[in-house]
Length: 560
Image (cartoon, rainbow, N blue to C red; front, top):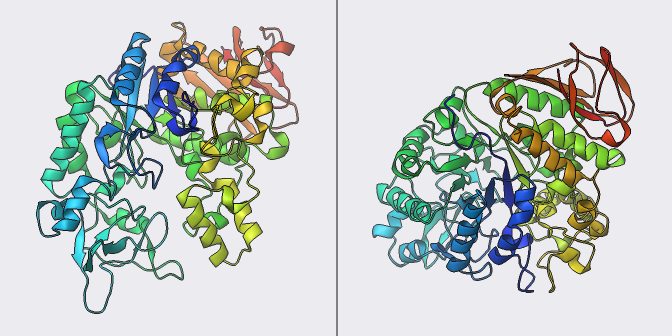
């Protein structure tokens, strides 16, 4: 694997609407992000990914873009964005924006012109089909947010357009070279402004299996999971390779792909030397236990053994093919500590253990805002508190499957994307210090116990443990091993123990007792130093002997 500038970095995702509100309107903004750059620098962050701040009607919280060249006034101005890029550079930090180009907003100029003249130039920017006399749809694919992917083209009852997400997110026709060049032009425009790169949204969807055809239905609605189409789609590499050559490569841009449904043997094509992207996210743990039939059949919590199996499998699969990006959560997932740690066992020690396990894996660690203080899922008491469009759809799916309103709310609460979108908890003051106004989404009531200010003051806090993780990964004595060294499981068969080596210039060993009960673990050799211990307030930083007694939820990083 050829070494690149991004390999030793730590990244942080900001959901701007919920990060920090600088003007009291209840919505986080770019100026608020600028004011927190030093906080992020102290956390060890090098790369900051912003969820969309482009102009948008916010039908899907900014992932429906109406102008790729403008900043939405809710978040600030283009001058604010330029200042953020400038101030980040002063701190040797890089800003990523979301690249959302599978679809745009139905309020985008292109779609408006397509509605005016479906047979003209811009009609070919989208997938527009005539309605036949029988009223049959061109295909029976189910959109990600429920219902068919086809809707009536505004102003044209005889025509319909394709949207694999929300109906206000018409899909762009990537088969049209004019569409692709418009995308590349926009990418180059932003990179010329000094942007460090992009996180690429839902990119696997840009290649459709044409001509449109039906697949076997898998629910009573007669529709088929769109994943069935993606399995049959061929040739996406032509688009992605072109985008890499024409837009990313000339700027050495850092790109991280949101890639699902990757086919076997494609890993090197996507993230190998000269691949389409610099890296992509490892979604194996987040996908485990999910069901194509809906959230009502999904697993709300993973056992330690299931989580271990996922990360070990991913690490083995990736090997030296490329640099993966590791996550515990993001804006589309419930909070990691609520998904991977049983409620009865959730505490500072177990949260730090989970952080230490994922952070030291081979790959680029991504932190989602609030993860560094152990923010948890929201407890929704009423469906009226739900904002997320996907949650609204899954609430209906659960009811259609026979669950009553209370049961459906409980199901949705466990998986709602709103769990990750509640405002960042900065302190114990009103609205968690996020805003002086009325927050756009309710603040999690536990902010008085879980917040940045409280953890800043406490040496043994989750926040300070994340800082220590970053410091070890950046330490010149260990960086080469942690960034490029191999990852090898240790004592894999021991239940509720996650242990693995990182081997390179040095040999390091991660030990994580993922249970309340203490255990004795045999060491493979002598230990020269304890680099990290999440319970270090109780233990001397030395380890004589060939065995170690781990207390409940104790995590250790050892140099052998």
